[in-house]
Structures are given as structure tokens and as C-alpha cells.
Length: 346
Image 1 (cartoon, one colour):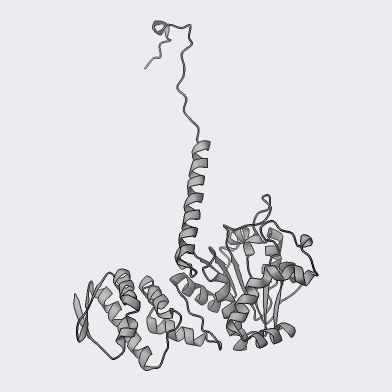
Image 2 (tube, helix red, strand yellow):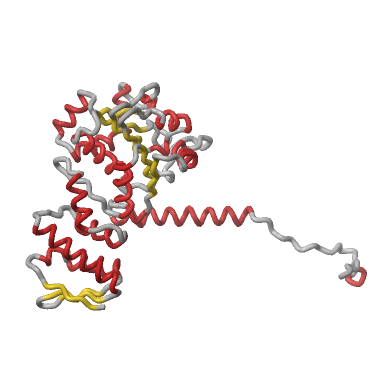
């Protein structure tokens, strides 16, 4: 099927650098896009051509309504749209506006990120599990700030286990706060990226935003709060059970972690892995799993994560082959001639 779309003013801003966005549409929708002097020709299956036509119409509507795409948001949205038949460019952009909170807007850059944001909006407790760089913590902090500024909650509580790569807090110099601050620094970075520094400092001073090790959560009931547990793969079974039972009225909890980067002693099982196993069938909870295709850092990070996954799979296969029983052919005693072998009836 072929379809011609008239060229409208400034439609070329949709094409991207060296037409990279058009290549995304061609590869994702299995269509051919041919630029003519006065029109754009779409060729492919009727359903795919109709989706592409809707996408061009959505872009034109957003452009006329004054929507501005920044920081590669357009390219990311197009990848989400071609990867999810239920997503539309207009729907993603308008949902991003609703999540606006001053300096930035929260915009998913992959279908899994979109599901993650929707899960946080629709559920009181969400587990985000996946490799580094997939936006698990950043998006959770962004949604927490959005909820705070929209007066859906009264405070934000960010927690982390104070365990990293085998180090122990007791060996670090300084007071307790000075010991734990380096472990909580990624949470501070996300806050300062989204809010003015003066506002962050004011919220921290008034405990509207609280950042603390998970051990400080024991015995508390967290009402009217947005609670985030980061690096949850480094919680013990007891810590995880303690955390998920802190949730009070009108509160949300987001638990994030990467099960491939566990720093607990070998004998301890990760509380995150156990919680995913135990809570999978509980109503009201949501689980979102990310993979290397969701990585939004440098493109090399995707390749590095994939290489580690392939190496892990290869090691597992080698270990499995070593455990498989080997069939050994029976040997004949050296003193028994071949003619004297016992007869085995059929």
C-alpha cells in the first residue's frame, strides 16, 4: 500500500539529524519513506502505513500547539511508539506535560520506561528491576518530586542500604552522616538535577525530603509519603520485609535494584530476589523488568551489559556441562579372552 502525505511547514524538524528519525520509523514499522518535492510517500502494509500516517498527524498537531521537543525526547518517543502499538506520539507528549515539574519533564525513552511510569501512577508499590543506566532511580525520583509538587504527598523519603562492594562504614572517617553521604550521593544528584539547589536545601532542612540508610526505617509508619528504596539488591531478607511493611495511608513505594550487582556476603540471599519471588502474586503490586535495550547512558553501556550477560550465560552452560553424568563404556577384564565373554541373551 502507498500513501502520500502533503509536506507541511517545518515538518523537516521531525526527520532528525541525517534523517535518523525516519530510519527509526522505517525499521520499526517495516515501511519505506520516500521524500518528494511536495509530499512524503509511505509504502508498506496498510496497518503499518496507517500508524506512520497517524504519527505524522500527531507531530503536526503538537507542533501547532507549541510543544517543544528537547534533549532527544522526540527520537526516544518515536522508539516507544514503534515498539508499542498502543502508544501514540501525542499521548506520550501530553502525558509528559502532566508530569512536568519546573526544570524538567518526565519522558519515557523506551516502552519499559513507559510501563514503569504508568505502574507508579496506578499502583501503591512498584518494583523496578534491571541493569544500570535504565533510569529506574531517576524516573522514580522524578515521579516522587512530581507527586510532592502536585500535593499528592507531603514528603519524600529516599533510602539505600549502606553496603557497597564489600566496604564497611566503620572503616570510613568522619561522623555517621559523613560516612553515609557517599552512599546516598546518587539520590542527591537526581534531586539537584530536577529542582533548584535552594529548594532542595530547604526541603532537606525541613525534612520534606529525607535521605537515609534503610536501617533508619525500622519502627516507622510512613503516611502521606513517596518512599523510594534504591539499590535494593543489597538488602537482606529481613531488611526488605521491614521496608515493604512500612507503607502507611496515602503513600507510594518504589523499590529499584539490579540483581547482577549484589554486594552482600556470599552466604546472604538478596532481599530483592526473595521479594520478587514471594510477592509476585500479591494484588496491588507491580513488577517492571528492564534490559539492556532500556539503557539511556552512553551507547557503550548497552554493549558492556550485553557482554557481561553473554559471559554469565556461557559460564552457566560450562558449569552445567561439568555436572552432567558421563556415560563410561564397560571394560572387559584383561584376563578374559574375547571368545570367553559371557553371553547376554536377546
